[in-house]
Image (cartoon, rainbow, N blue to C red; front, side):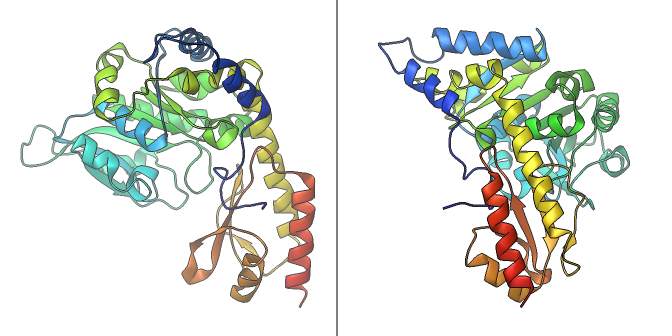
Length: 341
């Protein structure tokens, strides 16, 4: 089955799989005291700078929950978009595990701005109200849009002015870097991000993420939050070893580039049909558009994808690191047959 539903549906890159097989030999000390975890830590420091302190976890929800615990206390609030993963797609886990109020902000494109954040920065020092302490942004956003380096800096400058922290969910950070033609360091720590959920599952890894703190006071308690959150694995080498080829062999870049390029090819196909209208600017490997309802139902018989807004028949197509030219050509033939009826 070929799918355009999610980049979570794709398989594991061969180099990552090879790394897992190589790590699966002999015995190794558990809970991160192994050579693979040490090597992965050093590679992450080389990529993001010496201030980077990575902590490996199982998944994105765990990474976000652990990261936000490091930033907040239960009387704080976390500001995010109304489409944010922590608000919509994580079953309330970050709110439950931090005890914080999550404050959603409506946006037209899935991106926060200083102007959208500023109205929520009030009641500091008033014990009757949650205290704003963290801003959460997704890179790429849940609507497929990308924050530029300057946009991240602008948010970071505002957040730091109020003694708050900026958390970036980097589940698709690689796709953003390819789109902007910049390094991961430029788009994160150099832009003022305080803590990062660094993922590769959507880009060729099997599983696992790294919570990367860029400030020592945030890294200090992360080992305990990770343990309490059931995110510390005993056989940690199977998480950390994946980052070795992912970073060393530039797998992250080549995989994200293919996903982005294949999305552009789909855009070219969709632009042929006046009855298809994009609802968000295509900037990554996620495409959002409306199409005739009957056509969507027909396409659904051949491809797995998600409806984003069923009321207006808005669908989301997502390309992956392993999406091929044959996949695009097959999709194009299906659309031509369906929309030519």
